[in-house]
Each structure stands twice: as C-alpha cells, then as structure tokens.
Image (cartoon, rainbow, N blue to C red; front, side, top):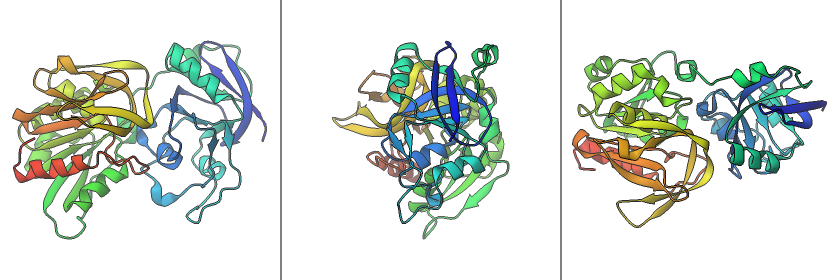
Length: 354
C-alpha cells in the first residue's frame, strides 16, 4: 500500500494508505454506523456521488459476497480505519481491495475515522477528496455538488420479475436507485414486479393497470427531481402506492410538502423510529441526507418519527391510498423489524385500509 490523503473542504488533511482503485476522487463525505453490511452499503445506489466512511473499525473481514449485492457500486470513494486483506467466510467471492479496483473506486485506510466522524457531526457533511498529493487549490473540492444522480443510477429499460409461487398482484416499481431486496420482498409476497426507469410517465404506468406502485430509494436532493414529482402527483389517488426513502420524499413534495437537508444525515442500521399510531419503537436501517418537513404535508399525517431527533420518518395518505417511510424495511443486512410494511402494502392492494 502507498501513502494517500483525505483532504476536507475546510482544508484539514488526514494521511492514510491507499487501496482499491488508483487515481484521485472528489465526493461528499458521509459516515455510516453499520457494524456489518458493508457489501450492501457499497452496492446501494443511494450513495451515488458520495465518499462513504465506515465508523466500524474493521471492514472486509468476510470479503465481498456477490449474492448480497443491492445494485451497482456508485460510491465515489471509500474510507475505513482498517481493511482486512485476508477475509474468511465460506460465501466470500473476492476481497474488498479487488472489488473496488474492478469498479474504479479509490479507497483509503489507516485514518482516524472517529475523529472524522466528530468533525462531520460538528460541522455537517462536507466535500472531500482522496488523493496521492494534497492539492494546493481546493476550488474543485469546495464547488463539487451531487447532482443528476437519479438519472445516472436508474435502469435503462424495463424488466419483469415473476412472483415466487402464485402471482397475486402486479406491482410497478419506479427505479430511482432501487435496492434489489425491495424486489425480493415483493416477490416473496406473490407480487410480479415490473421495474421501470425513473423517467416513466404516469400515463404509461396507469395504462398497464398495475395493482400497486412502488417508489424506490435513491440518491441526491429530492427537490431536483421535478419530472418525477409531477408523475407521482398524477398517480396519487389512482392506485395504491408505497414509497421508501427517496420515494417517501418525492411523494411528500408531490403532495405539496417541503424537504430540507440534514446536518449529517441518518446512515446506518441502528436508527430508532417511533410508531406514532402505536406504542412500538423500531430499530431501522437508514441512508439519507434529506428529510421531509412533516407539518408541511397537509394531505398526509406523520406516522413515524425518529426517536433521536424527532424528524419525520413516515407519512400516511388515507384518502390517497398511499403511505411512505424514510427508513428501509427491506434492509437485507438487517434489522428486519419493519418488513411488515410490505404486508401492509399487499393489504392495501387487496382493498384494505391503511
């Protein structure tokens, strides 16, 4: 391994060791707190445009398992405290270094990720670069912005996934950067799933007469996706609808609400979420840098709230036969506490109430 640097937009420099692909990279530096599931993190399209830092100190110990991929690897860079060079797991297909090299993703290890996490928590998410030499001019670093990422990560053509067993329902899944396990959770419940590109029109979707519409997770600023918001507005009230993460945010915007950027986002597998319609608090997997202003959505009611900071984590739209959540009920790496929401979607397609 050769020496490398992580340079923050405020000028702070951290020295480490390079692994993964060669070359420099610029991205928005974010941290995720998951103790496992790094394969799912690296293949989650919602991280497009970002340099991902793991707070857990040892990464790569069980290698890379292709069966657990959620999508394409879209991260701009990867930062860890210690990388395991000799993974040990019977399911391992390759090591982390090889995986990143194959996908052109630069990595940096041997840096103080605890200190970096403190900096982001205090200052907020900021741009950073992984490089061989510290740049004299930080203009490119300071002006970088995550834009156009939904268009970059969505599928290029529709695809059809048959239900497991008898087909009970047909679901149209709008792919804003969809994680593969959303498809799997629907298939397990007897749903045939048609995955559509993010630029699919509401007219095309409704003409196919699906039993329900699924809005996926995805990267970037939700307000940037003006066309997608307009299509969701046309779908609301016409067909049962379930949105996750970016799908939750886009639906809120379509219903007249507002979104805003969080200081450092929620990323990890340990976010507590309170059910405002009951007495339970669920531990959830999350990955988002924006949140919905729940009070701004007049057509919906807040159904879940983050137990740490009170931010909106879910909205119900009873009159529109729709509901959305900010967290990930399909999280393959866990926790699986909220997978019941897919059953709720099936019940809605049956004609049941929210």
